[in-house]
Picture 1 (cartoon, rainbow, N blue to C red):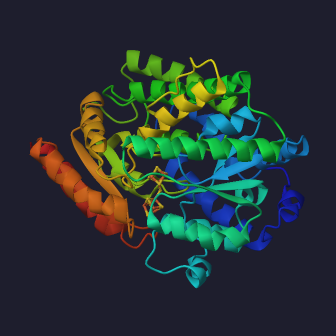
Picture 2: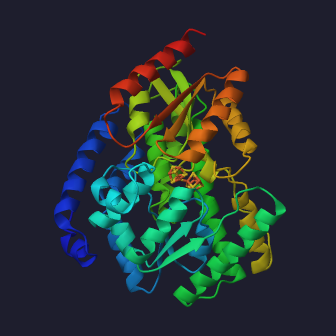
Length: 426
Ligand code: BJ8
């Protein structure tokens, strides 16, 4: 990797801690991803992206900033990338998936808080995340109570925090609220960039975002095959890179990978033997480098064939209608599209269960692993009714609740293996 130290220093990173983080990440990546057998050649692009995720991609962000483009960081799939692209901005995901500097995070936040939030703060306070430091605007959203209140603590630590309010119920009033919030966000982006959003620029933003979604949907479709042509780990990685990479390049690279997967499916070539037990993962998002549970599952004799998650199909299943002829109509279509997202912060949230059942059938899964992060109330509370409903429909469910530490790896592995045996005994 070229020497990016000057750029990292310029961004204010703590070089010593950052070096330690990259070393740990690099070796985890080698052990988890590069040790897999029969990976598609097309994954080499994603290996490259990961090797340069704090290097070349950050250099690209800095070059974009030098051209006057705005970098907009966010923590949730409710933040519309279409609008950011419409002002020629760069959208980056900021969720953090590693236990880093939790002591620092716990100095300003309670200990009993979801690790995803603590990780975001650990990275910020430890000065190791170039994406946060490169962001001109950071967008928060009122989803769970943890994030909502944590943004109040984050506000004085960052240059410019903009919070989008979100409804909690799927009602007309709720949709109206969301539409109004997206209008405010649009204005914020226009003011920050000095660029007016027009029908043309918004259509372009919609087109680029839809193209990304279509590519990952195409990839997901190949996972219906037995043998699975791609591992769940690699498919998750593609869904994680979705939030970081240049959108046009990402779309082209996923489509190249898909061309290869098409051939694999035709030739019945898989990464695991035919008839390997197939499971679906459902629940909290897995941000980079949170690969713990998928690694356990795929080293325990099962393959993951889909993710009902915001880093997965919950985040990408819907396209935005681009037929509107005014900015208002297009903004209305964006609101319609995002209002469908069935995050557990909504009450009630029945479409999520329908979606899990639909995915279970579509991907020929044999069981569902419900994944909740510790102290995530929305997903942990919802996991009970989800399990009851799925089991009633004859779908085997394993409920896991865990954090980012490796302490419970052995215990989870034992439970996953027992779950696989339960499925195989049916
Ligand atoms: S739309 S899932 S990305 S909020 S895991 S921080 S909910 S306590 S991440 Fe999410 Fe948007 Fe919903 Fe998706 Fe809170 Fe739970 Fe932590 Fe979470």
